[in-house]
Amino acid sequence: MKRFLFSLSLLMMLVFAVNAQAKKKYPVIKFDKTTVDIGTFSVDQPVQTATFHFRNVGDAKLVINYARASCGCTSVDYPKDFISPGGEGKIVVTYDGSGKYPGHFRRYVQLFTNCKEDFMRLYFEGDMKATAREQKVLDEQK
Image (tube, rainbow, N blue to C red; front, top):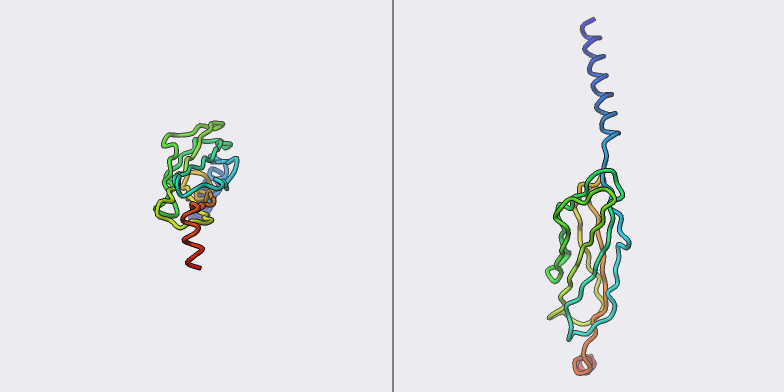
């Protein structure tokens, strides 16, 4: 009988724990775009920015714990405070193509949040064009 009551109490605790977990509220981060094309720019102006606008459409406060760029040529600025449900924010990514070869590039930023799906990526891409003088040298090397 003691075993039965013990098993029953464990089962009830498990049911309550599962029920409490099912009712837990989470933030949900929703971006206008998860890929931004910054377009074509010259090597004379190698520093470009991309802005990602988002909204917390969930039921709890959103926290961006950490943002990591895919390479050292990219920096990320993101909100360090809580974003309340219904609140908005932006993530600004700065690409520095100084010393890089001209051409198309595609980079990403990883976000780590307190959302149910705690990891996501934002992509940005563009085309860095050589100056006329540099293009002539590149064409001669071919």
